[in-house]
Image (cartoon, rainbow, N blue to C red; front, side, top):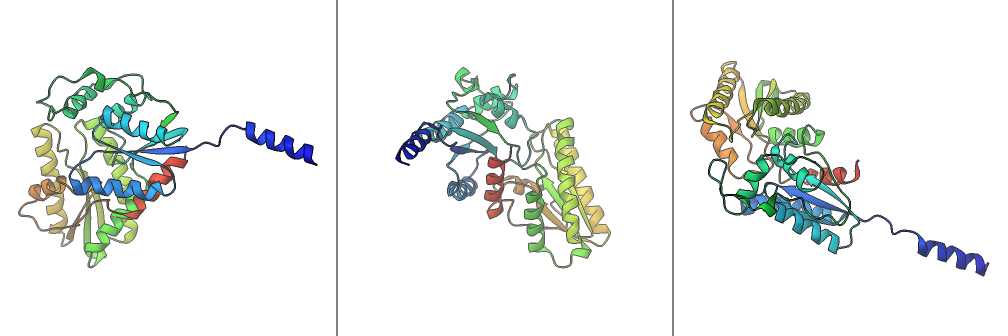
Length: 293
């Protein structure tokens, strides 16, 4: 018996250590309140899986620092979870490149790299630091999950936001408004996901549920066209006798919602008082992304 026990113990001690994953939570970053929403999500997931936050638009320094902190904490693999509304973004593809998950560097990474050291926005940037466009050093395997996209949790949260300002759903027109990208092809992908989300909200028995993007970062002509489409949609729904509910599909309020209000000046509508965050369901989504391959 003793020999068997010693052999069993010896075998156990020679087994490789159990995988210890960590979460690299990626987010755009914004105001103090905006960033705190992200840190609160990280604090919730931390109770189950070691989590570190990297804020910024494909910021190599932030990503490397968060990875290094996770490795120092003993994780043996990392799941990068982009807390972004859509995977269809050059920020996402640039992050994939920095993580060594994409071979070709997206052109926009040079812009993000310049912004990271004080370059400002596209159209007025400094020359990027070459180191800021170099893939990070990975001491453990890293994979990356999708962003929120058309995950059911998005519809669940937005439905709750709409319900918070609803009076009589059958007489109300919900319009989901998202930031959106610059180019038309990518915008079509955003809208495809948003329409899936809109279809799920329709189950709440609203009279109608539409989805649209405002494309803030696009050239003026595209932005103006997006504004015209949004205003026309609000006017059309209101003309039909419907109470219009604007539900922004933004991770967190912190500026873009003010732009939506400006675009809708003079029109009758009611807007929710927050974006997707804060909401406990986001932490559950992050954990799901960390374990589903």
